[in-house]
Length: 178
Length: 352
Image (cartoon, rainbow over all chains, first blue to last red; front, side, top):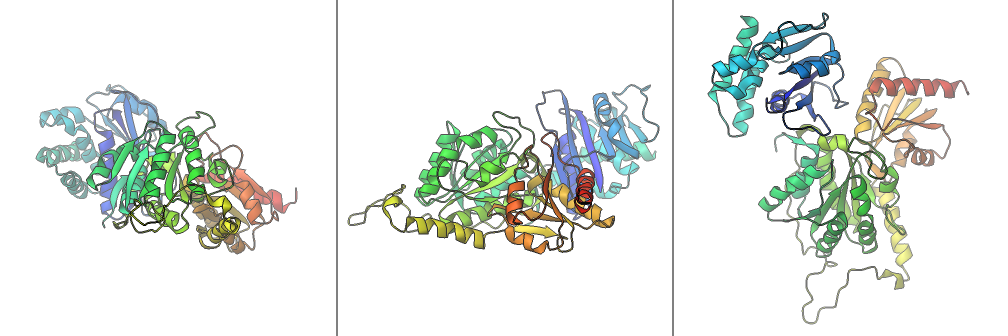
């Protein structure tokens, strides 16, 4: 069972990220669950969703012990860093999170300048996809090859195809693997 | 049909259409609004009628009209909005009309709040309106069941010519899971001889209203109807119940964590089981016959008063201690359910 929270500013695509992850899991025949943050949120405020992917039946929709915390801004780290399991993974968008920020020392922190990379590739809405590349490269949830094809498949099902997404994804992988 | 990702509320809406529902009238309220929102565009695609009514009461009464004409009709609400529908549900029951009414439960009495809750159990199972009636109540515990039970609800409503309620909740309504929507079926609006089709020359004038009091067999007719529901419609899932010393009883979202608590308990050698009612009425009393070794029962439900405890006591003839576990403030945690169940079992065994 993998427990993941995706969080960032509204508009950065964190909810779509959650949907891409459960779609990738479903296509592998796993049980998946997406739970939106529930309550009143305002435009430009924090957006987040909980994602579970498991070979077993999924019980609670709530994520309390995170394997992966996928963040795209600093408030998201403030809000959820405590919930990461010891040894768990925290993905940080170093384009907009201060460099001198301190993190827990019992978790793995992967910093990727996701916003810069997405802008360099002229795909400003692909920040989340850069970070998904980084996630694939730094966890064993999905292989990079599989997740790349699953993301394409996710958008293809919606009748959309943006070749720049794959570029963003690969740059995210490279940012971790070098 | 392949599995797709859908929100619980949307899966319920799509499954209603698949079951031949072509009339919806409702009013927005969190956490059920996605049903209304989804049907506002989707109903048009399948050639049905969608109405955002001026109130909950108007919505349920429009459903009564559609049902009298033989249509498969749906209305949905939550919390205070569901209370407003009770008058219409009572009238549907009195008029022998099928219809499906969904309550996506939220917490609290009065306005309450939009958070998850299971506080409508008594209202759902005891006949929430005035008079001498109750209704079949189906309780989904996943997005898939939200779809499957929505389809079943229309069949049961027509089988008994009686309203059927779906007791969904905020968590099941809001979560997204992979779901297979049941096959689309056509519903023939003229299928039943009791429906109003327009009175042609020479036809006997037909009325749909509660005119049955002058029928000397009315009492027998009604008590037989409920007896048949209780005999034929009990639905439940039981997990590891046969040798269990402590048996959990949980439905809807709570049953998901109760299921996990049983798995964790069994791994730790605790003789624990779960009865998951899928029909809240008729309450699945048959399930309790399997619990031969049970020393105690514990309901897991998100309310303060332990509303399901009474039904467990009735199902077991008051022979065993029953307690409730759960809070209105948070979804129950599997670890906490197991810990509480073990403690309760120990207390009962020691005869304290």
